[in-house]
Structure formats: C-alpha cells, structure tokens
Length: 74
Image (cartoon, rainbow, N blue to C red; front, side, top):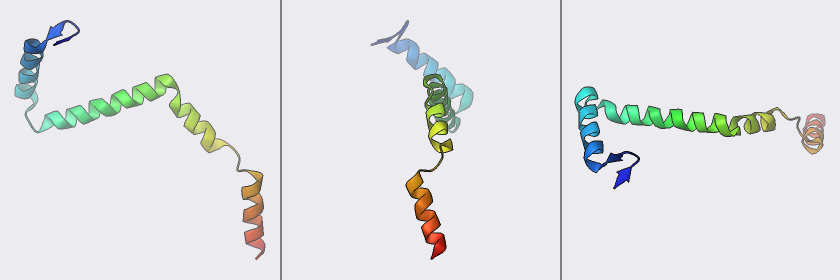
C-alpha cells in the first residue's frame, strides 16, 4: 500500500514519532482540529459559505410577510 511517496513502513514510523512527541491524549485533539481546518478550507475554496450567506441575507418572501402581518392584526 502506497500513499504518494510513502509506504506502510514509513507511515508507521511517522505515526510512532508523532505519538512520542504529542502523546496519546493529544493526538485525537490534533486530528479533530486538522479535520475542522480542512473542512473550513474546502468550504472557502468551493464557495459554500457565500451560498449560505446569500440565502440568509435574502429578504423574506411576500407570503411570510403577509402571514406575520395578519398574525399581528389578531
């Protein structure tokens, strides 16, 4: 099994060094923060944030406005 220029023995050595440096408690925290960072980077590159922002800033529909005004009159 090869992942880019690294094989399985190289990946195991890198994992062992990381385990020695950071310890077993910190590795899950590092992994989750790395995953969040990658998701944030991916969403900023693809523009998903802009799509969400545009949909939130749009004006409410006429039906929603009419319904809220009719509720106020009751």
